[in-house]
Each structure stands twice: as structure tokens, then as C-alpha cells.
Amino acid sequence: MDISSIFGDFTAIIPMIALLIGVLIVPGVHLGLKKPTATWGVALAVVIVSLVLNVILLTGDYQGTTLDMASYNPYSGLMILLFQIVLFLAVFVSNSSIETTRNNTGTYYALMMAAAMGMMFVAESSDLITIFVGVELTSISSYALVTLKRGDSRAAEAGVKYVVIGGMSTALTLYGISMIYGLTGTTEIAAIAAQTQLTELNWMFGIAMVAMIAGYGFKIAAVPFHMWAPDVYEGASTPVSLFLATGSKKMGLGVFFQIFLVMFVAGTACSAIAGEEIRYLFAIIAAFTMTVGNVVAIAQSNIKRMLAYSSIAQAGYILIVMAVMNDYAASAGIFHMFTHVFMKGGAFLIVGALICAGIGEKISDYRGLAKRAPFLAFAMMLFLFSLAGIPPLAGFTSKFFLFSSAVGTVDGATSEWVWLAFVAILNSAISLYYYARVVKTMYVDKGETTEKIKVPKIFLAAIVICLVAVIVLGVYPQLVFNYCEAAASFLLP
View 1 (cartoon, rainbow, N blue to C red):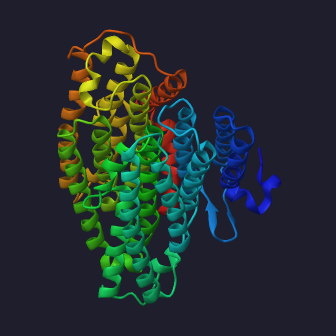
View 2 (spheres, rainbow, N blue to C red):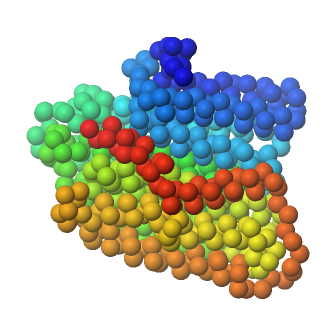
View 3 (spheres, rainbow, N blue to C red):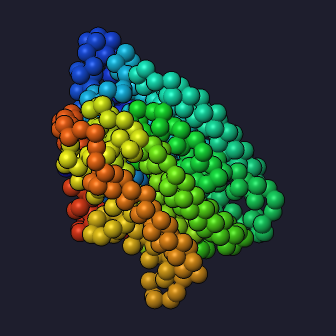
């Protein structure tokens, strides 16, 4: 289907326009009908329409630009699909969750769609200013989403921490962008990469890079900018925690790809003056992020905080791409983003479903779960083992691609980043300990009761979607990896 003939010059942003319409009408639907389920139905329909439009563009190999600001291409289309899957899962279960608000339902869905719209604009941007605006649209919407939790003071506390730390990250990012603009006279990423006056590493350029890495490092919760994540994921409602852990974090990683991969690939002026330094800086951040995330996760007794630290570690794995900086690494990084959406998203969905059934958030509350809810225990086991990298699940396949990119090049030569792959493999082994502890609690430890647990069917349907994806992408990765390779080739021509 050639929908470009229908939407013309606005075809590139039609998935975002669909969400924008949803942002505008959903609050009105809530005010008019005052029925949360009707509001949810309209919001879900809007999300599905946006997703279908993007799938048509992506499978139809469409490429185009709108207003010289938003560019649809294989990379942006695939990242938009990732954000839409996250948005669909979060919206799909929100109406059945006992944690989400009933007084501000229209606002809740509008904020979630606005946050996703910001992520999608970031994916289509190639300018530091438009990327910044998209990131802030997502961030501001996320601050409000965290506080919209029914009857929980932790949500307000988490929201305040998120706003304060987010403000610091915004200030650092703006400072870095202003330094870059003062040095080069442009905010266009490709133009900055090609600046011929950048002949040596000067203090202005160095400060700008560090400020931007720190600013966007907050968004992905990279060490040492990670302390907000556990509190926010614990305090927010589970659908929002799912949305932030699998969506917002991927947006931040996408920003790193779009800015630093483009600026520092071989052959650019930036690469000539600071390419090696930037790669080693990212390698060090990646190593510390995965190590701190996994080691601190061991000590957690709250399942949401454990998953939060696990997400920090997963971000560290994906940052391997920023050290290796080649097509294969970028393909593997994007593929791991997709598998992580289903692995971590599925785990958060099970946590949310059990909260609806009156089960607490502590790991000890999961004792005897295998007898009380066999399917949920089995699904959680697969999601956790996939996160640990156990074959033949999707996490093993994506980690294999990602870690192998740091071991050697395509022509068989050994890479200088073998040590980073070793650190990642060691961290995967560490992670298996705390994932296996949850499995032991569910299958070995005896619970106080054997009464069967009933959870909302909507949650079960979403969990099945994630479970199927984790299994299918593990045994047949080419289903998505081919698109990841096309995206990486476009990003790094």
C-alpha cells in the first residue's frame, strides 16, 4: 500500500500525527463519558492505528522527510516500531491494573502517548536541537506519569527525585549543545562531524562531549548517573515502570547512536581528533554500568528494584556498541533492544499481574508461586533466564551477537575490545545468581498457602505476547535482525 500518495509531505510523521490526535481527543473522551474503560479503548485504538501505519511504511521501504526536520528511514522506522510496541504493552494492561489512577484516566493515556511521540521524534531527528526537544517531551511527560499512581506516597517521592535529577541532566545537555554550537556554528549532527576547523582536541570540544554524555547518561541510567532509576521504577505504577524501563531507556540509547556513532565513525573530523578517546570513555562507562547494575541487584529484596538494577546492567551491555562502533555492533545493539523489550516487559507484566492479585513486591512474596500460578511462574522463569542469556531464548541470541561484536571483526581479526566482552560475559554469569534466586523462591520455597491466584486476562494476554516473542526471536532471530542490519547500514553508511 502506497500511503505516501495519501498523506503527501507529512507521510514521514504520520505515526506521530496519529498519536497527537490521540493526545488531543482522549482527555475529552474521559471528560465526556467518565468511563475509564471507554477512554482506554479509544487510547488503545489510537496506538494500534499508529502502529499499523508505521508497519506499512517500514515494510514498504518508504523513505522521506517532513519540513527538513523529521526523516523516516530504515533506522527511524525500526526504532519507532520498538517504541510503539512498548506503548502498546503499557496501554494494553493499564485499564486492568489496580495501580493506575481512575480520576485522571484521560490525562494518564495522553501523557503516555505524548511521551511515546517524543521518543518517535527523537528517532527521526538528525539535529541536536530537535533531539533535545523530543527527549524533553518524553521526560516531562514521564515525570507526571510517575506521580499518577493511586494512593501511594512513594510515587510522589519518586516523581520529585525524577524531576530534580532530570533537570540536572537537561542543564548538562543544553550546556554541551551550546558549546558545540559555539565551536562549530551548527547543531546538525552530520555537519558537526564534517567540520574541517576541528583539527585538534580542544577544551571546548572535550567539555561539550562530556556534558552531553553525562546529560544523556541520566536518561539511560548509566553509572554514575543511575541512582534515580530504582526509586522511580519502585514508586511508579507497574505499567509506567514497564514503559520507562523498556521505552525511555531505549530512547536514550538511540540518542547515543544518532549523535556519537554518526559523529565518531571513521572518516569524520571528530573521529580524527577524539575517536579513540570517546570509544574508551564509553567502554569504561559500559563496564562500570553492567558491573554496578548486576552486583547491586544481588542485594535487592524488592522485585521491582531488582529489575531496575537489571535494566541498568542491560544498558551497560548495549553501550558496548559505543565502544566497538561498527555496523555489526549497531545491528546487535538494536536487536538486543528489541529482545529486552519483551524480556523485561514480560517480567514487569507478571509483577503487575501479581500486584492485581494482592501479591506484594518483595521477592519473598513469590514463595510457592509455582503451585499457586504455574503459568506465571513458568513465564517469569523464562523471562529471567532470557535476561541472563540462557539458550535458546532471545536474550542468549542477542547477547551472543552483541558480545561477539566486541570479540572480533568481520574479517576474523581479534578486536581490541575483547576485555569488554569478557567483562560482559562475567556479568551475565553474575546476573544468573539473582535471577535464579527468584526462580528458587517460586519453585523450591514453600508458600503460606496453596490457594490459586487469579489475575486479569488482559495481563495474561500481554504476557503470552512477550513469551512468544522471547521464544521465537531466540530460535529465529532473522525475523527482526535483518531489519536491524538495514537500520545499522543506514545509520553508518
